[in-house]
Image (cartoon, rainbow, N blue to C red; front, side, top):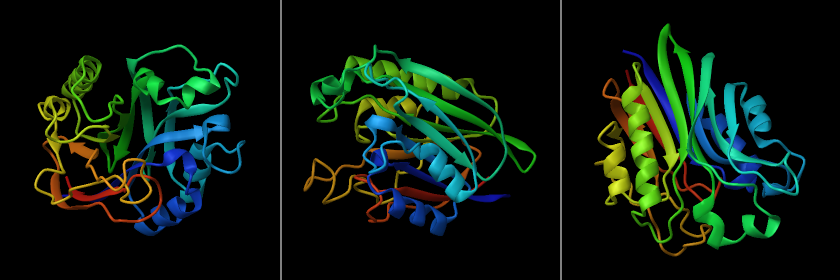
Length: 253
C-alpha cells in the first residue's frame, strides 16, 4: 500500500497567490488539481504578466501540466484553464474537450450572462507513481447559478463519466463542479468513480465570507477516485487562499 495526499482547489485567478503557495508548501501534497489558472488580462493577480501555472509549479518544485480553455479576442496570450501538479514524473498528458466557444470580448468575459458559455475541458495527466501508471485529472464543471441540472451540465457530466470509464489505470479527479451532491450531474460522475466527499461531513467548500454567494455556503468542490483507493481522511480547511476552500484528502492505494 502507498499513502498519498491530493489537494483540489479553484485558485480564483491568483487573487491570493502568495497565501495559496504558502499553504501548498505547508501541505506538501503529492498531487494538486487546480482550476481558474490564469495568465495575462484574465487573472486577478496584481502582476498581469504573471503566468500562474509556472509560478506555482516552480515555487513548489513539482511536475505539471496545464491546458487553456478560455480565450480573449483582445489578447490571445491571456490564459484561463485547468492544471495538475505532481511530485512524480508526468509521462503523458491529454485534454478532453467538454465544450467549445469562440473567444470572448473583455466585457463578455466579466458578464455572468456568458458564464454558462465558458469552454470546459478535462486535463488528464498520466503519472509514473512508484512504477505504476496513475491518471490525475482536473476539471471545471459547467456554470449554473443556482446549481441546476441544465441539459449542457448533464451532457458534460456524461462526457466526464465516459472518459473515466475508459481509463485502464487507477485515477484521481479533482474539480470545482459548480454543483451540489444532490444534483444529477454528480450522480452521473458517481457511476464511474467514488465521490470521496460522501460521508465526509464537509458541508461547504465556498469560502464563507469571500465567495460571491456568501453568506450562503455550498459544497461544490470534489475529489473523485477509482475503486483502488482507500480514504484515510478528507477535509476542507477554512483558509483564505481563494474564494473556494481547498479539499485535502489522504489516501492509500
